[in-house]
Image 1: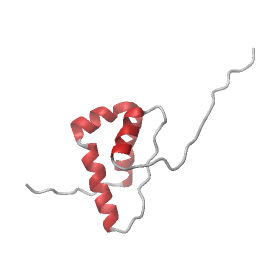
Image 2: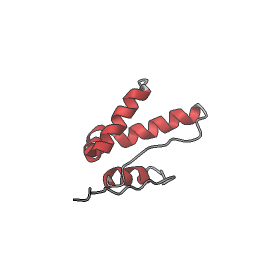
Image 3: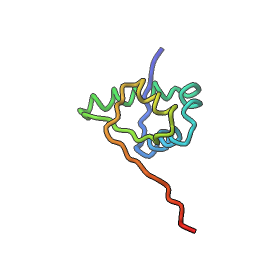
Length: 88
């Protein structure tokens, strides 16, 4: 079996990871091998000397958080927000 890597633009990667944020994580992981894709990207970046790969994830997207944690990603920052209701 031979594995061929097709060059991916930053826009392609952003689109794929954006889909993860939109709640399609489970489908992508199961049906399209997103886990393997991230591992291949890591391997390529390592060969180019890139020291870190960062991802953004919404705090409510537990599927994506679980995926990222399983791949060794750790929380490096956190943002919080509170919705305000106008006074009546």
